[in-house]
Image (cartoon, rainbow, N blue to C red):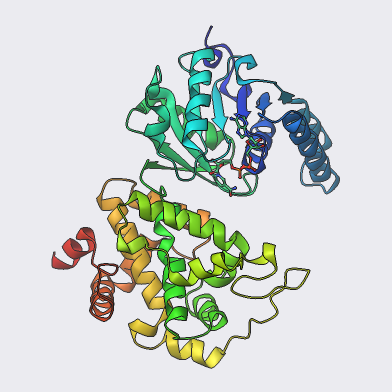
Length: 400
Ligand SMILES: NC(=O)c1ccc[n+]([C@@H]2O[C@H](COP(=O)([O-])OP(=O)(O)OC[C@H]3O[C@@H](n4cnc5c(N)ncnc54)[C@H](O)[C@@H]3O)[C@@H](O)[C@H]2O)c1
């Protein structure tokens, strides 16, 4: 097959999306709006056509509301094509896989794609938790296999983690990075480390709050308020995990914990495990940390503002903001030190992927790494077991 990338300008080169669910549909919309013919495939009969129809309606709504022009909506809609099977796809410059999170399924799909696409077609996975190297293992031309981790919903979230597996070559990374940039996205690069950047560095945001509630430091709404009012976070971890789904958040945490050899830094809390075991999954089940009415408003979130302020200005062991920020800083410095991502990319990823008010590396410098190190030492003395150990990078920074 001849190379599609060499035939057409990059902007108009064909792109394929396999898996027409929440993520695949959103990615298809982004690529179609950027001017690419987009070929959508799904294993379930009719699912790709249904996704195309939904996207056509979405694009029409955007035009009706003046968010885009009628012409742009019409041309983006005309860019969407349904294809029955991966083997029937035309030669593409990029194929993005967004099928369910199962290594065997993804490997089988990539083998099929590799057999039918030209050798220089970029083959990307949107996996959240699987190892890109494991998906690429055994394929011909594994250098063109990489992760393109979009965030939900893809049309609204600017961040894309461009993930390199062991075999991914620099040319593929550069091409994919440039392509998503032309789609209006902000790419950051990282290795295929468990959780990549965002799902790794964010773990303590949830874990510290849950541990404090479990220890009786304060009720969940007060911990949330402290982090919002005194930490500048847009949402507290309790309300946020209720929105994400406690089961979804626990699955991500458990995956990172397992993949890091059960490092105590990532150990899921008994508090969250109990919520999930009791079916308290969050807003979607009407009850998680909080109870919700039919419109999704919490019914029993009554924070104590005085207590939130006292905690946020008090000793680190019971201070939701200091504890959380110290752990985020430790985690971010460790990721950078291990060569998984640059400090700049970690900060960009956390601001755009999680809406944190500051990137954790910059935040650490602002607080003072010596202060952060002292806070962690105090926590480590209070709670033994290694969760609060200083990362080698932080230890070295404060020795220097
Ligand atoms: N939902 C999120 O917030 C999110 C965010 C980032 C990444 N991801 C990742 O994106 C991927 C898809 O997630 P989702 O939430 O869109 O899932 P989803 O369940 O909404 O959609 C998956 C789609 O893939 C189809 N499918 C399953 N196996 C297939 C196969 N072998 N070939 C073709 N189609 C197949 C299904 O019919 C379904 O339409 C997963 O790897 C997930 O980890 C999800």
